[in-house]
Image (cartoon, rainbow, N blue to C red; front, side, top):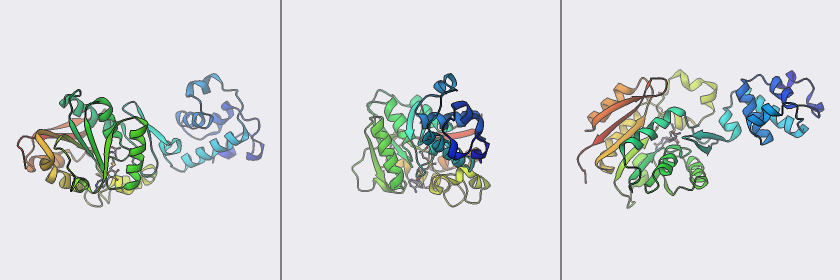
Length: 291
Ligand SMILES: C[S@@+](CC[C@H](N)C(=O)[O-])C[C@H]1O[C@@H](n2cnc3c(N)ncnc32)[C@H](O)[C@@H]1O
């Protein structure tokens, strides 16, 4: 591991410089810089400008431990305890999925479809770190935002992130719409979700980084479409007339997910490509009211 590539042994870390540390790690430059900046509490720019600065041995040891964990496959976001989403820094830990850039597409699409200044009502199902709900709440100051998750640990992270960004979100525990049972909640202008969508036998689940994330955030334990079936079967009852449902899915799932939207009576069903051009998000609206 990277320890052995340092120009000195662990016991003699007294005179290690920023340059030594960055050279020693067997990691992409960006990753070693992020880890070292985190340990020192400085920016990456500071590291570049101070590459001859010496670390305290405690700091060097901490950095080496993080490098070793990273080399074993732990995601950088978990090591840093945070990840940026829509320009917002969010706390993350192994109880939540690390928010992905492609999920920002849900937020940008919903913002194009609603009046961000109006008191719209929004529901985020399977909120995890709270990424989508918090980004929408930030962009829509008058919105009433509900967010659910089946995982109490994930909801604790979402709660902490909502507080950090000072957005009032109602967080509820339960499976999909069950979390709303018995509550006097409004009908929604938009229901969003990035549910677990990897099929249980998909090899992607074996990737070292995914193995660090909670299985419940990744797979439905079936064919990968279970969450869409559950959500779309009930969504209309929770929507205002003309309300929108917008979900993320795997890049090969667009035809199946669009089919489920149409089967459930949604119209204007459209699939949007992510930054890599892959079909990633499907949305549709429901035009009548179900009481
Ligand atoms: C792919 S993660 C998405 C997290 C977050 N929305 C994001 O985009 O980063 C899916 C989330 O759905 C939650 N989840 C899984 N099964 C659920 C269920 N039956 N009901 C509600 N939430 C569920 C998981 O705990 C996880 O937080």
